[in-house]
Image (tube, rainbow, N blue to C red; front, side, top):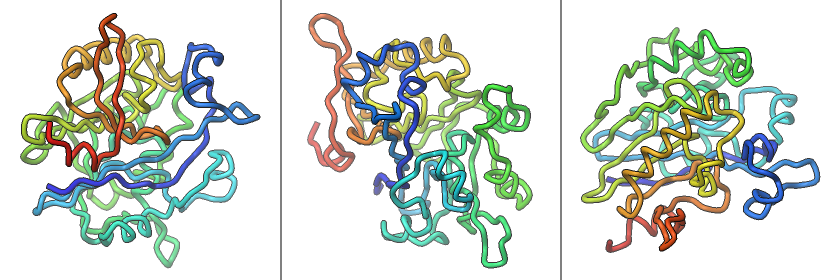
Length: 283
């Protein structure tokens, strides 16, 4: 199985919103803000090639929106997903499956592109697009607080073309690739668990967006239910801590992935590295 992270560009978000109730005096030591209180976020995707399927997890913002949209997101880097995929050795036609962890714009925007005639079409013409039914229903009827994060042009063309596949429960998508539902950040977010021998690689998506969000109070204000996120994090850490399973941090511009431990005082700490370093390690 071949695994590689994909850089689909960068955005900047409000630091206070990104770290929730944690005071700036604490979080800015971890991720310094600019003069507008903005902190950098990478849009880190994951590509899995198991020899039979070429699977892309999430699609970033894409590049079909107008200048005003990208200005509001404070975008920089390359958001042209088809170009990025080609630079990583694949063509859009080779992608067999796309897992959309959820439908917020920075995760689903690249799923749909404009063709030469200006029509909205699936970016990956031969792919099935996987999504939780809970998230689909939620995106169609979002709460007012979350509504701006869902843009129908990012996912309705997938439904119209009949390429969406709904996931109703935690499931094994393909051998060694499992989809797990979360409900704190948004209803029906899918995290992806990949079995690698005795270890697991977890693409947590916005359930655990950076290495700094391993600490309990560090919960994004974007989460629709912070109490649920807190519960989900506690259950996840009970399983993962000290077991040398690896988490990919999808929005962390400094730490690609890492292992979570407890120190002698019981505090959570992390060891961070690149995905290649994890895969090539002997543990």
